[in-house]
Length: 73
Image (cartoon, rainbow, N blue to C red; front, side):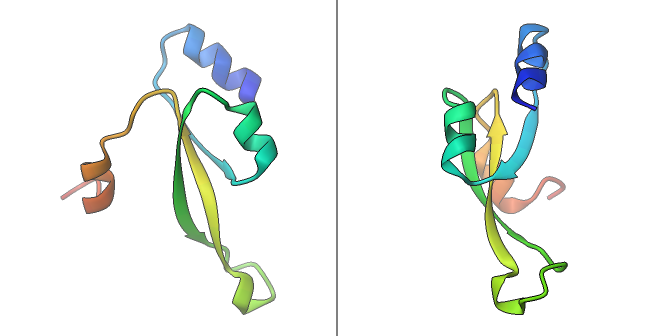
């Protein structure tokens, strides 16, 4: 996934990817903008563990005001 993203970067494509919030992903995408996002996995059998934190990884700095209010407001 990271190699594909780097290829897009070389072509000047703005992109956003979500992935697990792990030390490996932080290392793999070091140098990119990373934002924690809360998510819910309904497929998890244990209802106490359905809320998770993922990373939104971008090659640009997102507009945080738009991200907090919603895309279509």
